[in-house]
Every structure is written in structure tokens, then in C-alpha cells.
View (cartoon, rainbow, N blue to C red):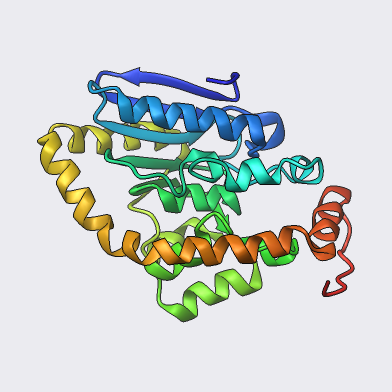
Length: 257
């Protein structure tokens, strides 16, 4: 890893990848994104590993891109580096990856979850894409992945209001596979991983390839559109104002430019 902002451990044939910036609510800066990219690469490249689990250390899963890092000029590397956010959201993968989420999974954190193949959530977890409240767009795949998972009206409500919603609602609309007490989160994710890992690896890869194929084909053009819109927004005055207002804990003053 680039540093200890991401931890990597194994339990038999299961990789556990942990975002480790609890003091920043596991927000993703450039170094963390690079470390997560390395961890995903290691998981994919080690033949002995069959299934991965992505989780967050401390009180939350991930609160998204570090807005201070955004203000400090790291947006290009975080949002447009290899594989984009965390080296994960636009990366081609062969192995199953399970998100184990607790606390909050918002903004880029929610998008990391959506980029995984399955999700296990703590009953108290909150989800959302609040980018509209920050002068941005869910540009790490969230805007279109949510539309793949949900009916348009539901996806649009989440995107356009920027409001958070509770774990039972996420389970009800099919965004997570299991809903458990937080104390049981990792063991539940490990149990699901073991159920998958006992199956034939070539079958798993073929099944995932076919499962992902429709979305992947559609996304080839969507990523280009996504990047064009996102670049326009991150250079806007409103995006700078949204990030500043959030870090200063005040109401943003939008100008539409």
C-alpha cells in the first residue's frame, strides 16, 4: 500500500480490504485512493484469493471524497486516476467483491458500495448521494449505477434531493443483500464470502462477466459523458462554494456558475 490509509488482510481465500482514515470519516484523498487501487490490484492478482470484502475502520464505512483534498487540488487524481475513485469504480474486475457497510455510506462511499457486487449493511447505516447539496454530481458512477439498480423515479429522488436514507429503506429497494446488527457485520460478510468461495472459480468469473455485461456495455459511453459533466462542475464557482460551505458548516450561497 502507499500508506496505512488502507489495510489488507486475508482469511484463508478471502481478502479483507479496510479503508483506514477514521479520523476523517474514511474520506478518500489522493493517497487513500492510490492505496485502495493497490489493494484491489493485489486482490485481483493473487490466485489464492477468491472473494473480497471492502469495509471501513472506525465509526463509518466511507463519507466519500475528502472535500479538503478537493479544495487542495487533488480532485484530478481522486476522480480521474486509473480506475477512478479508489481505483475501483471503473476498473474491470474478475472476482466477487462484497461491501460491508456501517455508519454512513454517502457520496463516494455510496458509489464504492454500488461498484461492489454485493452488499451487507448494518441496520443503523445511512446512505445517500448528497452531491447536489455540494455543487457537484455523483461522478464516480453513482448517477448511472443507481439508475441501473432502481426505477427512475426512485433513483432521481436520491440524486436530486441529496437526502440520506436509512438502511431498512436500502434493503427494501434492493440495494443491499443482508441487513444485520453492526456487531455481526463482518461475520455476516465473511459468511456470505465463504458461501461464494466454495464454488468453482471459473464458474464464478463467467457468471460475473455475464452479470456485469449489460451494464458494462452501456457504461462505455456513460463514463465519457460523466467525465465531461464532472469536469465542468468541479471547476465551477458553485463547487468551490459547496465544499467551502460544508467544511465551514454553513449554508452555501449558490450563484449558478
